[in-house]
Length: 359
Image 1: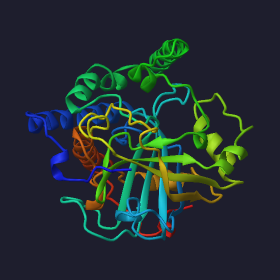
Image 2: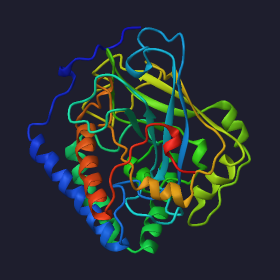
Image 3: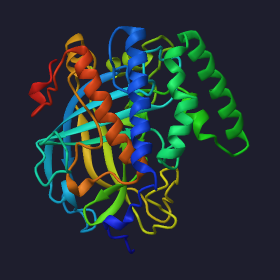
Image 4: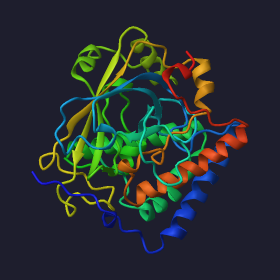
């Protein structure tokens, strides 16, 4: 099989990208300000409510094929990792309003050439969502949708947000019965599920050393078997309670896999909404993420989470995030994190090992 070689020309900036990125940054910071005014605390620009902050190991597999042994995955190694699970809302609301959910992985002790302007020198962050592709093709389309929908969240009472989520969930379920989907409805009204049963994806592509790829994190078979009869409650903190009940008694294992780009026409870099065919290029395992038994949420971990910053710009040059959606994410995440630290009066406290994370 032939794989597309990475070259800077794989990216094509939008004609008005400078102005567009500045506009998106303003939109995201304005949203963070409204959330802070509503709740008296500044949160992550998205995925505000912490379900769990967990420590574990990120083990790069041995004997990878040459096209997979790239960047962070060039040689077998076991890294410490700090993993954050959170629903997608930009403010801490009830888990009954089920929509997008995210898993962020901070791989610690990483060495190698970094991205320019990266303010973190020892981690590789992977920021992942539930779908294999993003809801918008590019930053312009995302700004248009975000202005009409996501930016309105803090202006609504929680009861209204919950009602909209349930309505979107019902419409999306009806569409799926006739074999179609609506990504924006799915984003806002996804059926709830146990936190450890779902797969997560970078959604938009990244550089993968000599190649271009998407990365996915999938619950391992043994984890799914153990979770088969695990209930998910219906309370305001259902995700947190389910994660705590399971992880305090049993480990959670994920298979980390990569889907390499084989054709830029059908697997584009600048259209993040394009689902790459798994028939043309399947996800292939490159690492294992293991979370040993622990309490994923404690007051000490919630306080420590205020000092952390997860974003795609914390990366090796070999794993540069690609496409306008990723370029917008890097800029917006940095801006909202600066705002969050400043308003909350805290400083960044990036962990160097798992021992830095309180229990």
